[in-house]
Structures are given as structure tokens and as C-alpha cells.
Length: 204
Image (cartoon, rainbow, N blue to C red; front, side):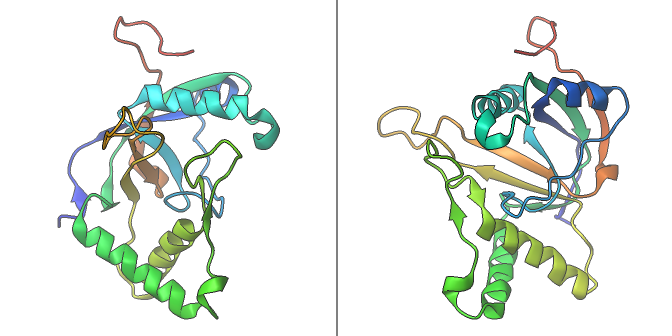
């Protein structure tokens, strides 16, 4: 019962303005299916952080050559998310389940060297942005649950420590955040246009 999170979450998604306006007009965001997605396949949101969503979109614009110009005009949309049955990585039991999925994946590999690896995505990265290993572990977990006829997870939630220390000796980092990956699109209950603290439209 503790895998079901009982309250709604506000998530924020950084994207190109054209994409965001289309979603606000009635379209759905598309699921990300990269083999390096941090939490596996799904639609990604920054929990309660429109600022982090916007800075991410701006980063993708700066890296337009590497990202093939996916973002020309940074934009943020909000979403009301029902986490439902959630693989919540702030819970110890969920972490143990994820480690078990790694053991299944490792046992299926010819050797440890054949496992995917988490690597830096761009030359400026100080973190492993392209998380091929983590993505494979999450997808192994979901496939195993399906094979065992266990209930599927509708969302995945995890805190991440990312970026440089906030100040010398700090245990906090400048890009730390909580990320939500929605696997079941029915758990996105609606989209909205975020506003700033003064009531204006929150955008660049």
C-alpha cells in the first residue's frame, strides 16, 4: 500500500515554445524513449521546480549543435500528476528492488564489461548525463514485474544530487532536484501555464 502516493504532484517540463503551446492547446507530451534516460522510458518532469525546468531548456538551446536544435525558444509547462503506483526512490524498499533488477541484468550479461555504462553526455558535463546503465536497470525492473504478473508502476520518482557544490564544503549541489517520470499517460491529469510569484507568466 505504501507504493501508492496519495496526493497530486506539480511537475514542470522544459521544452521548445512550439511544443509547449501545442500541449497547452490539447496535445500530449511524448514519452522519451532514449536508451540513456535517467529513470527509463516515460514523460519527464521536475517536481515543484519551474526554474529548474527552464534552466534545463536553456541548456539544451545552448547545446544546439549536440541536441540538433531541439529547443529554439525555451519554454516551461506545468502538469498536475497523480503519482499512483509509484516507484519512489526516496524509499528504501524501492532502492532494494532497483538493486535486484541490476542483479537480474548483470546475470544476463556475458560479462560485467558488456553491461551499459553511465557516461558524460557533453564535454562540459561534470555528471554522468547519459545513463545507459541506469536506464537498462529500470527497464529490466519493469519487464521483470510484467513477467511475474505484478502490478506495473505508473510513475517513477527520484531525488538526484547534480552539479557543483553550492559552496565550499557543502553537501548541497547547485542542480539537485527531484525528477518524476510518468509511464502511464493517464496519470497526467492536466497541463497549465505556470505563473511567477507576481502572477505574471513564468517564462524566459
